[in-house]
Length: 371
Image (cartoon, rainbow, N blue to C red):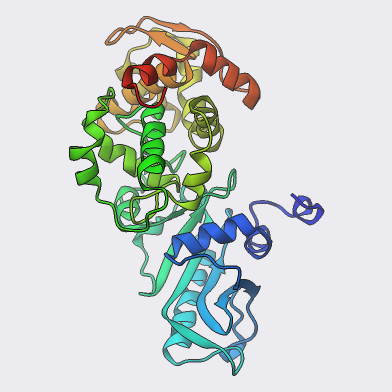
């Protein structure tokens, strides 16, 4: 992080714009998300004045060909700011349709896109529902994780998951985990790396699951679909169901490092929600735990926590035991042992605790593939 970045609020629009202009890794993630092959000739620049003195935040171009015009927003925006951004996108689309450019040498790509880029935190920071707006037909919505700059597309799959957010359902985090262990997600990443790392063709989840992945025989062998959904939601799998550029980077981690990264960058809000209640009463029943969480939030349901009559909570408890090891308990039993407190410790400390207490080694060796 440069000196200038340190002076800018990381939740601000200016911070996001600076990262897009200067962060080569983020630029590669964006290009990958747009389905374009990255080349050094692709340029990210601040937009100049278009019709009606409208200034796009970012222009993505390849020589004189405009690939995309981008609107960036910070994490702490309100509904007015969000809708204003959508309005800008409609103007960018209009420029494309009427062939209005910032200079005479520019031409538009036939696959031109308008891009809406903002932190994924917008989902939980506001009381408006991003799924319930109309966007231009050329728009690709990209959400950025400010912990690691991973991108995910706000796809139709994501839209369906967040469409029910409202007064009775709130989000404390944006990431979906259910009926999988984290080490199973890691196995899927390694499988894709080993078998399809250099391939650009479309992969089909059902074919991979039925003909290949179920042979690995993990705990949740019938839930590889959920593993794909979780990895796509974190930005590790692209629209072709293969590893994204960020996914390829993550595939270089060992499983202990992977789980530590997932903890700090993705699941910590869920741990902060559930662990203090378990620490207070380590034998609390799942149904009572669900009620305690809802009580804390004025009886509102929590996305990916209190839904499905405790099934999400059960899944979280299994992750807490098997992937992180800060809990230990027998299946279908409420007597739980607390091995350590995962909150307020460093990444190095957490990795050491995972090595000491998790069941990762046992299950990876059991698969005989990624031990």
